Image 1 (cartoon, rainbow, N blue to C red):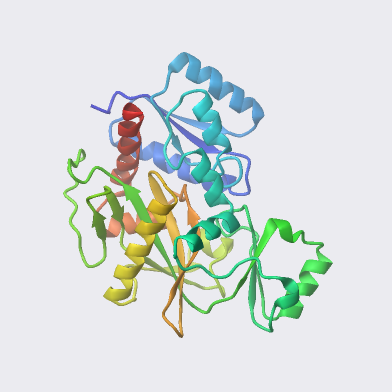
Image 2: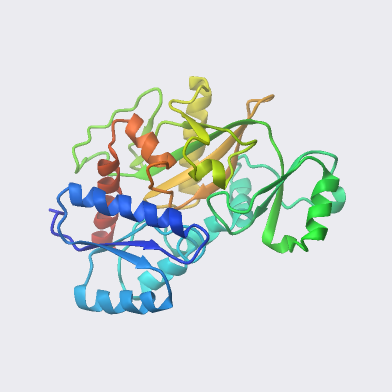
Length: 331
């Protein structure tokens, strides 16, 4: 019933993550072709003229869905989502407000803290810092772009002064030594199972039938660098993927519960990813950030997690698409 739908895969964009987005877009496009979808198109949002072209194309073609593989500024922060709302083109992923909030790390953490979810304390006052290690992150970037790590308070202060860093656009967190993990959560009609996936809850995967949510097997990340930065994320061989994670089952269960609560608290849609650090000494998990349009490249986290749950890359793409199409009919 979905094979004849007109799908446009939107990719590229104007952010620092453009190259990753192009790889994600190509993967999604090829996956849908393999699944037998004939009316699909790959479209690169490379400049402002392409925005006008997209609007004109939709007026003529009347696409049923835009599958978003845009990452970062303008593509993941609610801007593109707002445009698609205006031209009445349904799309995958979080809605406008949710996309904007989750792209803003500070706002996201305030909401999570208010709902008793564990995060690292952010936006510390420079004058009150102690001699600990710190992470400086851009407040509105994804894919670990622009992250800097400092061994001492003085190193951080020197960097801020030398580079004239506007702290209004950054957040400061204490650096935690521990295990970096990521959880991927997605919506799917578990009760009717339109794609006949026949998913079952296991020790490594959680299913929430009441809310039609899947929390995929937790992925452990062991970067060759000191922490999981952009280079480690998108350079082959720079990070070891551990599936399933080496964490004990009770801790895994806790992280599944925290991830699903995060997803519901932020009113997310489609596929989302919640990144954690599990502190080595206390074994406490802390939410680092929430990604509303996770990468879909051959090196990306969510496809690897899905595969461990016996959901192929092609099935994952179709699952995301079908869920969005079903919602577009209900709206």
